[in-house]
Image (tube, rainbow, N blue to C red):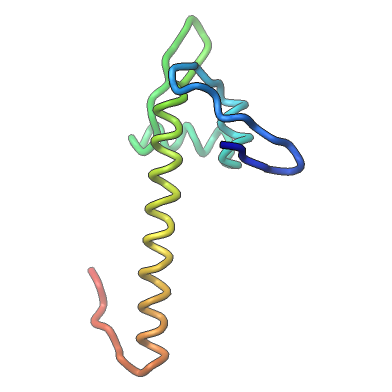
Length: 96
């Protein structure tokens, strides 16, 4: 599967390969600081430390990314359905 961002094409590496932060930030368009924040919140896979280097299993990263995209789409659809109901005059009770 190919991803295109800013006229560059990234080939999805094999699932057992190790990827670095440069690859992750160019693929998901989040900053390295944001990725480390997600790691501290246990919302992103922890890296494998090799000396001072941090690497991630490609399988772990793509599992996170694909799940993030799926959850984002479901959240968007839920918000769109709520907006349609409000536009039709059917007020929904607030969700906690």
